[in-house]
Image 1 (spheres, rainbow, N blue to C red):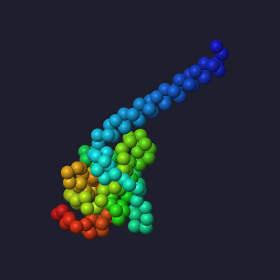
Image 2: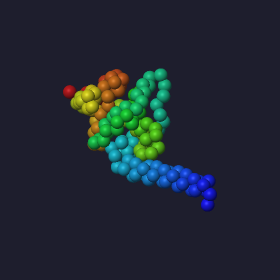
Image 3: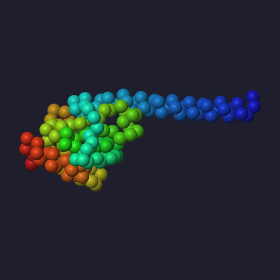
Image 4: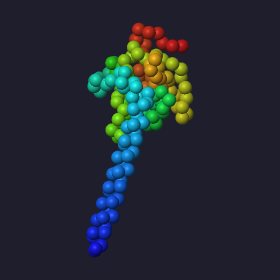
Length: 155
């Protein structure tokens, strides 16, 4: 065999091995992602369409806690008149397979403030399902919608 064939075999093996590893990692992420609170939230409040318009405020790649899991700089949060839109940012959305959720304001309850990673957060609860912990900047943008919901704010 000459050198070109040996290099082609080695190069093909490396590329194939890399693709195999990426495929296995994506499969593991999808299997693990199906049992999370984010997937439960997406199942209960499925995204019909991504919010858009003049009164929409987007927060890209936020650190957000959903249930027991903290997604560090992995969540895109959108505050819209329809509700709070929570979705994994790319490429995580394609890898993990968890859907996006559009939680209506009437389903959210304001909980206690907390500090995580030296940053202030507020907990928004979805009774009977999970808690979503969002940065204070998201809460400030969502506050007008939370105040106008028919249910009172928690103390």
